[in-house]
Length: 202
DNA sequence: TGGTAGATGGGG
DNA sequence: CCCATCTACCAG
Image (cartoon, rainbow, N blue to C red; front, side, top):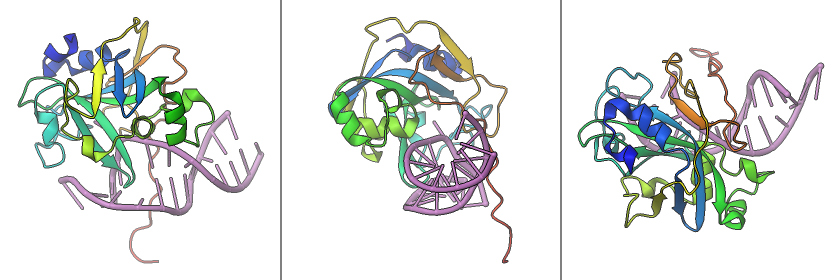
């Protein structure tokens, strides 16, 4: 588990090293094809932890090898693998994967997926396919938890890097990693400014 | 094929 | 008010 020992300062290397690892939960296994690094050391304004420790991001500050799960837009969940040393905030967001086992179950959980390649090509979709939600937060990935992580059975192959998705700041930081050419990698969308909801009353 | 409205809840 | 999102629907 080489990525486990990587210090938080190299959370980008940890995120990259997670590509190809297999995540299993509730009868479905995905091979990770896309990740993003978040450090929260104060130099990373995109991180949930960059303003310091709160109830929500506390898990990011804990020991490596656990899941940091948060809810977004009121209805979806995203999962991170906590990295780095205990006491330092660092995590790798799991953005996409290829379903390599339990495909039928995955299809049932995501009936809107038109092809198997898009079953888990996004962080929210990945969680739906695995049947995980906030209950998986602060849960160990190596023994005893609802989700488990296993080393790659095949080499990840060439890796590409670029700016993180949905992040308004730090566009110059190439901390999104994906397996080059993999069809299950999420479609990159440049952050589009949300339509101004018109200030004040009409 | 690309833009976007709306769903929906919690954080700061 | 902001979102580390997704789907459906629309125009061309």
